[in-house]
Length: 260
Image (cartoon, rainbow, N blue to C red; front, side, top):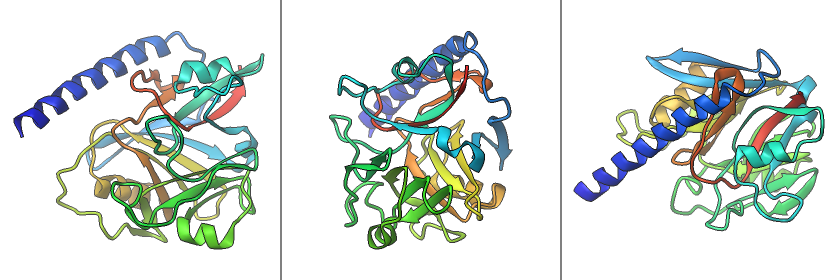
């Protein structure tokens, strides 16, 4: 117990240092797509909220590897792939990944399946069914779909990322979330407006439980379907908020590209 507590304290210190360095770095970056990201408070906790309307759906991108086939892994590398005149409005990690940074579940880029969908239950957060898929560029601009329904329906997506668990399912919190849970992490995820016209990406600014995070999507944002991306490695790039988080390398990364 002492060892686990010490390791968590060391991890928290490293994370705070990374956030501080990232904020200093972000102050030197251009602010783009003004109004995309904001900070909102709910139940005494702060959340970074970045929204993408349907009109900007085609500017939402999902990255994994660079032109050389090697994992990009961080926001600086992502920015290095952008064309002249393009800039990164915001970005965050977009799902769980293996030790080689390959996605745990489904990943679709530019309409092509990179890794297949995974539907069985398993250990860990990803396998806490129901889990789900975030899909953009299909029949609706944005959708969060339960994984088994996705596998059955096979909707078209320009980009898609599978993760888990679902945070909100048809307006209800995941049945395994506990009000009195003591599992707290800085967490990030995505939800969609009921009409599918807006994608809402969220990062908690402090450690929260699954139940608290889900309540923010459902009760504060009015989201009926939301998906958890991750917790222990969650990172946000949002120069509008003065953030460019450093830290552990990531697998899939999602973000909005605009004009520099």
